[in-house]
Structures are given as C-alpha cells and as structure tokens.
Length: 269
Image 1 (cartoon, rainbow, N blue to C red):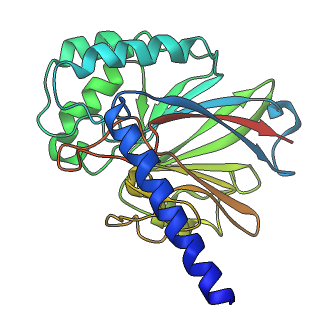
Image 2: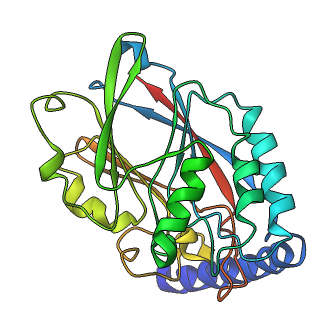
C-alpha cells in the first residue's frame, strides 16, 4: 500500500513540475531574477558584524549584447538594497569577451560601503587577464588565492578568495588564526576540503542543477559541482551557500525551478 501511494505521489510531483516548468520556460524565466534573502548565524562572528549584509552575485554569463540592458537593471535594483559589501563569485562572460568599456561602466555603478571583491570562475580563466582587468576597473578587488581583512566598527573578519583551489593552508597564519573566515570560491565541491577551516563558503557555478524537482533537487551536475548543486549545506561549524547565478548558459538554454538570483546574506551573531 505504501509503495503504491509513494508511486502516485511521485507521478503527481512529476506532472506538477512539468506543468510549472513549462510555464516558467515560456514566461521569461531566462531574464527574470529575484533577490533571495539568507540569514547566516555564527557565535564566532564578531559582535559588531551583527546585521552586516552581503550581496552575493555569481554567474552573470554575458554572451550577447542585449544582456547589457538587463545587467543595467540588475545593478540598479541591487543598489536599492544598500548592501554593506558586494561579492562576485565568477563567470562574468560565457564565451568571447565583448563591449568591455560598457560592461565596466555598468559595473562601476555598484554601491557598497565596505568593499567589492571577486574571484574568477572557470569561464573567466579562458581570458584571465582581460576578465581580471574588467573587474578591477569596475571597482572590484579580484582575489587570486589571497585573503583580506574586512574591518567594520573596529572589528574584522577574514575573506579568502580562492581560484580553482581548496588549498587554504598557505593563507592561514597568526593574523587570521582566530578570526571568522569567509571563503569565496566559484566551485561548491571545494567545501569538502574547506569546511574544516572556514565558517562560511559562498559558491556558484552549478546554476542550481539547471532543473530542480521537489524532493529530488537539481538534476544536472558540473565538474566540481556534483556533491553540492544548490541551496544551503551545513557541516558541523561550517556552512555552504550556493547561488543559482544570474543567467543561463549558451549550451544550456533552459532552467526549471532554478531561478536566477542575487543572494542577500545577513550575518547574525
């Protein structure tokens, strides 16, 4: 009896998913986006960082000129959120770099009180120097396996920007040994190695698994995005937050239930 009910339930979920998925495919899911509010709490967080807000953007995936009009709107909407810090998790372009000056002009309009930092994704590595220069001229500090102290009301946390690596050992020292550690790394599966060293990891890369079904999760994986595809994952004292990213890819012209998003993360003591 239980097996029969379970089968019926799965069939119902499948048909509902197909129905809603078809709707979102036909009604602008490629260009629409949302602000997803996440709250992260840790006793290790310095007291003054309570209510500190991070806007986390990943996988912009520019691949045609009309994407720039959409990017302008995204940045305009982002600035209404008044984030304390803005982080970019990689993959600015999906394909050949184009309209560099215009992209810089758009990204320069991002506002934040305590800095803008970025790491590169695997697509950025194709033209690493150019993508780094675009982000730098736009006001981002690009971290290539480096860390920075972020100061807020006389206290600090350590931000680690890792590029195609989970090796944080060379960056750990007496200066950051006891501090709250936030790792920004494009690929989520590095969490397997980083979870013993950092309190919070922000990643993207997977686009939520492209198709996400209730009770099942994302259906498609990518290299270094097989263990963790979407959402929030916890392991003892460490947390991984994965962004669905802001756009689809040229060779994956579809997304179902994996909505384009900017993650607004509020830190809580």
